[in-house]
Amino acid sequence: MAHTLAEKIIQKHSDDAVTTGSIARARVSLVLANDITAPLAIKSFRAMGAKAVFDKDKVALVMDHFTPNKDIDSAEQVKVSRDFAREMGVTHYYEGGNVGVEHALLPELGLVGPSDIVIGADSHTCTYGGLGAFATGMGSTDIAGAMALGETWFKVPPTIRAEFEGELPAYVSGKDLILYLIGEIGVAGALYKALEFGGSTIDNLSVEGRMTIANMAIEAGGKVGLFPVDEKALEYARAHGRTGDEALSADEGAEYERVVRFDVAGFEPAVACPHLPDNVKPVRQVKGVRVDQAIIGSCTNGRIEDMRAAAAVLKGRKANKNVRLIVLPATPAIWRQSMEEGLFEIFLDAGAVVGPPTCGPCLGGHMGILAGGETAISTTNRNFRGRMGSLQSEVYLSNPAVAAASAVAGEIIHPEDL
Image (cartoon, rainbow, N blue to C red; front, top):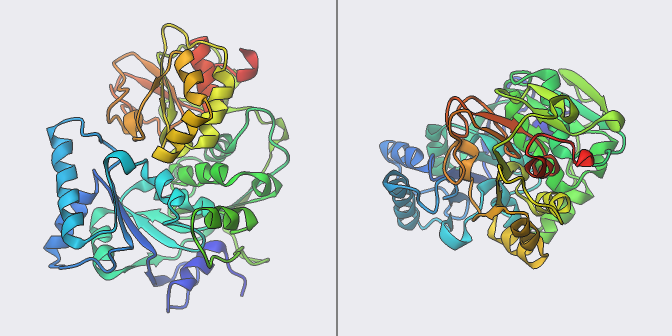
């Protein structure tokens, strides 16, 4: 019988017979929580009567959402997580100078990778599918159970296959591919389904671009977003300290619920307009929308590839005097690399604020909250009403080049039109 990527990865971690729709108990490779969700998981962990985590090396607690602590409440949340990590001897606790946005940090550290099963108390855990991991977000109670037992259960999801063919035009990136897909199938189009990506465009896409796409699988309702484990994924895994990973792809003849095909030749950068990620339009159709703030960063587009794309547009230019340009490299390593490559000089010359590795304003946290009537263009992943601040604010989603160009123009614009 031919199998999809989702079925094959779950089978590697389960003693049950795995078929679409079946219930499978699976051993987990890593369990993740952050400063917002870890305290809830810890409360449930203690209520279960658990005395120890199943493996101190396979639990990661990343304090990335509100740190450095923005107020007393966030400081208390981090303290709960920090005390638990010390009590349990958790190896992978990150706060302060070694913390980064979790979904950029963990791949960089080699803690997640090909054919892993990763569950996290954060919906964008699906990012690691860019490396061929079955990675998904869960509620804090499920995370508590997995921290204690080292396993969880899945209803094996059906799979939608998304195929992209052709060479990407200038300024079109992985962010645009996932936006066009979400625009096509809708925010519930893949509800509790696996999204599996393929085609010549995907073959040629960088691993960072793949992680950007996988990151936003949840914005289509997806359980996971999965890419084959090819030589690019294996090279990335080796470069980040992993050994023993093997190539993996779906079987020829695997059964898909649906196949969605795109020819990227005519694509231009995409923008998701308020207030849903599926309200997607080519950038020139929204040209002229005034912006007050531009954000470049997050677990979606805060990697070095994204920093370079933004800097290429900003070099020799100034942000519009009416735009607050905020750049947040996603990890300390990306921050340092950006500095060493001279990208910070470009950002600062353009009038940007360069902040620490943090989720920042993406979730309405801090470092860029919007007031009523304000509009932002952002490389983040969600633009729900009130997502970045006031319920009367608006957020447009784009790739880093479009966000940078729009900061310069003071309005949404195609980088080619600057």
